[in-house]
Image (cartoon, rainbow, N blue to C red; front, side):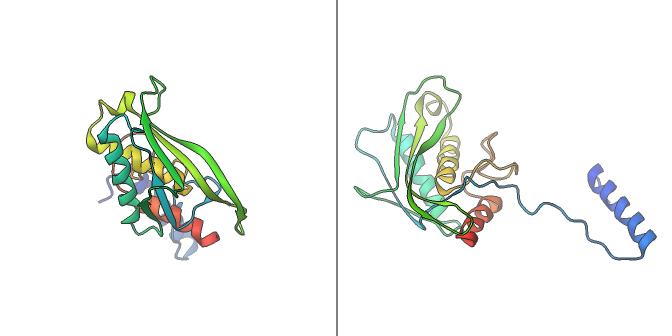
Length: 190
């Protein structure tokens, strides 16, 4: 019935404990795998780019896809393309063999903090590395863009291999349960 060895072992241990104590116990597991960066974003994000700031239209489309993926998820976040007043400056370039196909940085903060000490994001920069993205599929580039926008929101890498914030592979192009839970956790404290 239980094929996975860890599940069999857990059920066996639980059975022994129940038999010895006569008390009904529920095994406790970690509720999440996400990690937070210590920033909290506004609920509305304007994102933008200047004409010619992308090495390819596929990279630009992936950023737009990622923004839409987060906006359409259950997370309390809305991204919208904005011409002049934006929180996220996006671009792509041939950055060379750096080891990364997307990177987020240049964080600037408003000075506002919430009860857990997180700082409110004012501006961030997201760059796709066309050296790598030019040989990636559309789904891979969309994954990278959605993942990098997760950093903008305040998420760090997740240990959940199903999450968009998992840093090893191109498993999804949209935020998953662990990702959404991470964003909701930020707002539960701010």
